[in-house]
Image (cartoon, rainbow, N blue to C red; front, top):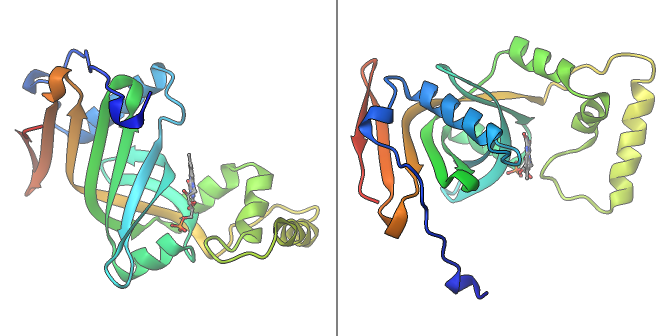
Length: 211
Ligand SMILES: Cc1cc2nc3c(=O)[nH]c(=O)nc-3n(C[C@H](O)[C@H](O)[C@H](O)COP(=O)(O)O)c2cc1C
């Protein structure tokens, strides 16, 4: 089938005001768990969008590792392209897409560096091979060959042979705090349901948006 001819009717129960929860974080967690139960591949995957120093948007998939009233936490190399962009401009957006459920959530907000304790704890929970990788890979920098990466991995394995791998100083968490968050539920005939929550002081207000 041609890509332009693909069409799916979104036969879902929809999202109505009665389904909304006072705090959208609770609704985000509910949708995340429903995506997990529906067997979504990597239900915690989200596209994080940032701006480079010229104001040009950039975006990539990362895994959310925490969702709470503080915001959405993810972990990465802080010297990566995204890390440099966040240091320059901490305004960001994140988008989840749970396509089997015809659902998406988009978040806009501000990114802050996660605490050392949160980064240490998460790093310690990772498989050793991923810990080695965090030291070995200069994320987002040009790399000659795959062999160059393998050599770097070997060198790091030797450096930390027989000891726990410490968290690299350039690796850690970020927390995207939420200024606004939109829940999108696909409906038939492209007449989808959309609700956007925005923070008014300390109170969340939701409004329906046209699809
Ligand atoms: C499913 C999936 C999950 C990913 N999770 C992460 C992650 O949690 N942290 C991360 O740094 N990169 C993750 N990546 C890789 C990023 O998409 C990206 O390639 C990398 O972070 C470099 O991005 P940057 O050059 O914009 O900094 C993931 C990619 C995919 C497809």
